Length: 113
Length: 116
Image 1 (cartoon, chains in turn brown, purple):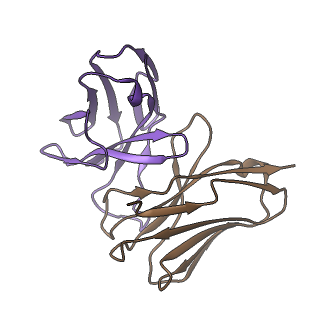
Image 2: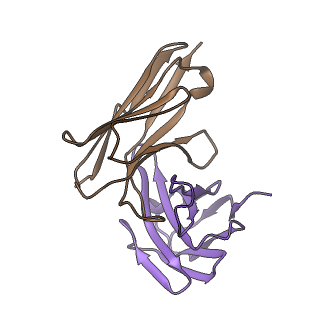
């Protein structure tokens, strides 16, 4: 059973538009939800993360929205730029430093100029 | 210099061969991980180690083994490689303590393995 479901698999957005990627999780014990960004030929890197005690976290153009009752969280990229073209992974784990992450299957984002 | 290094970066091998992928880190982290990435399947955890004496199986450990030779070194072995182990393999590290609230894992550049 897939514990973290991510959609869509791929996304094309025009420059300046809003990119939205959604994830849903099964295990209600999860309480740490990061998003990782991966460029071609590179390893993933942490982009932004949220804990369930808040409903939203914003860092620059990137925002996580979290809905605990629906067991869903999403990444919003405002004013999307060609440099944002990458693969994005949501993940979940337990609120403990260094705990292993369970990743979604990834979303490939292409921002057209 | 990169904080997390993986060797080799690319490897082509034949079915049945034993192969070892190596990971080294200079971040001083206690925790190390091996992930496998396949197109459309995301990242799947193979093994993880919380310190030199602690090794744990992940989601897809069958066909793989690991060795934590030192705090800074964590190697992944395929005892008898098979074609469906063709994938991109990533090593990652993290701190034991969530010092900045980000609970971040730091990934290496990956090893592309092809099993013929």
